Length: 248
Image 1 (cartoon, rainbow, N blue to C red):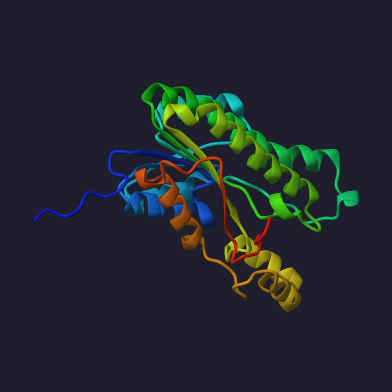
Image 2: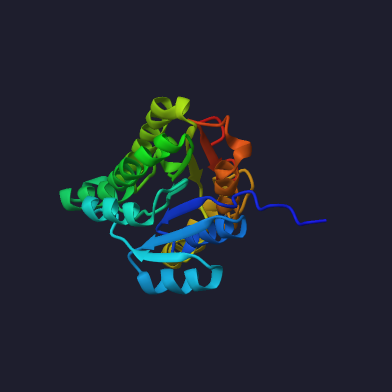
């Protein structure tokens, strides 16, 4: 008896911000499910080290450079599964931020999603199949004290994804959002070093589960939305946040 075919066998996946943290977990999970994964990240050394361990491709990519995004996706496409995970945060009250801060946060967290989607969609439409999975944040639904611009950008990702779902639902393409809550990543741990036990208690207390999530739990949600089983799910926001966004 032959072993079952992996659920994503023959599919090509492209993961931005895929070298570390949540992105790395997504790349590993999609590769384990049979996808041919391209890991795109500014940190090419970390991306290549991960790619070598999971039989994937690595490419250096600045997601804010629209011409570079188009060229890289053309070189590594056509893409069946696009995962927009690249992101950056800045914890500061809005009155302490600058227009330069706003432009950086919006460029990385929102405009990059425009760029990759614009580059990947034509081939998906021609093929009659595609999965667009955008990693936003519960901040995009609930707001964020000390993260107004980040929350606005992630809210924009949600609205954009739903619009893309509406425009392409009849072409075999789904577009969905995953909204993580507090996930145990090296970046979060750096924040906790500054905020201490009080910040950790606030984060875990905001969830119904009473704990931090893991990158693998986010990756599992991505893997499900990438599968054929999820063909009737589009325009949705899936919270992977321990219930933080319950009712939002």
